[in-house]
Image (cartoon, rainbow, N blue to C red; front, side):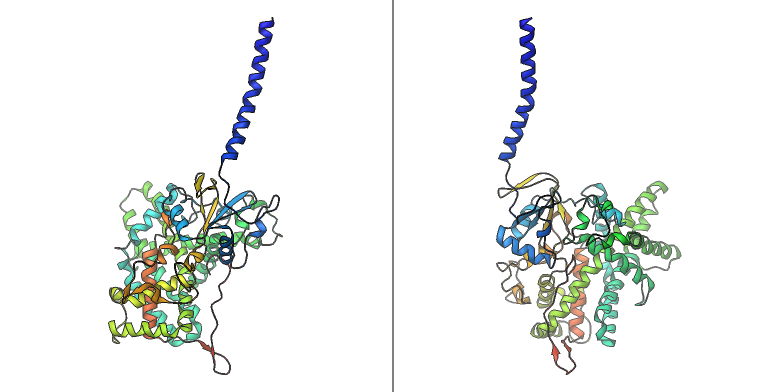
Length: 489
């Protein structure tokens, strides 16, 4: 009996000791874990929610990185958010550890707004890979020459519009980009008053919101239960219209491309080549693959317009503020191209200064200052700090492009910084290596976007003089650019 009692006591002690031992191990492991990166002090429950910058957040994040270091951590509503503030850290994490930072945060708002078909917002997996691969075949470097005629047509309409009504600069810029992008992707030739444009513009409004890293509402996992009277929740009241617009961007131009291919009236475009390839598959494969192709080109269109539009706006501002830059670029164009024709893609290698203007336009006031958020797939450690699995990771692209150690006097528009002895200097960091994204999430359409920017900028410089507007007394109105708050500035 005593032996049985002893065995029972031993079993009870052992049973209670094991959970205690596991608890001790967990506590010890937690103590050994590296700390999270430093950041501003937080509050109970909400954490650093109210410390997240709201106005020009890229400037606020830059200031915090100057204070705390190149990795800054925020915790809001139980979610960790890591901000990267310099190029070296961005390369180390997004390039050298690209698999861990290729994911996106899971945003319920993407589903609620009808954008869950876009691979731009998709997690790192087969859905994303298949759509990116389908698009990449048509926008890789040796494929984009097919779209030069569409680029020429966009240039022609931009120049004609500017010469006829220069006061409508913004309208002409957006229209010329629509002509190029819709033509290259879907074979559509839209008029400036085409009703399709208004529909597409409405759908694009939500892309700005979803890619913005300054709005808190979309990160809330229980977004469907958030009261619509709270500040910043106005978007929740418009979900039905937003979903309809998102599906219009995906379906309407694709249906146009299918009809034009069937009737033989369409122009060569990405959608036609995809459809022709699908026509050689059996019915079951075609249905699934058509949905994939529709997703891929719809996402490409949605991503292309606003960022290029913002970049072109900055170019016009820069030329009005820096007339000497404009004159030097025009002199190079006159010397290389002459006055009897317009610049072509084939002229690019002989126009180093114009190339430098394009690079500086990308850098000076970055179109997407905070990029699109990433998500850490596994726990990671960097420079003694812990980046937890599931953390949202934001790269402050604007801060990298305004790093004085890389670009001296960064607020000044200086194309000369990329030149050495009359040629482009490979030692200077190319802004395109950052502004188009990094690692596995780099923009697949970057070569097409870069080629479009070059031909538009070179053509405008070659034909049109850009100067500040005049006030009521005929005096030039010169004011520095003021970035907007949001994802695309």
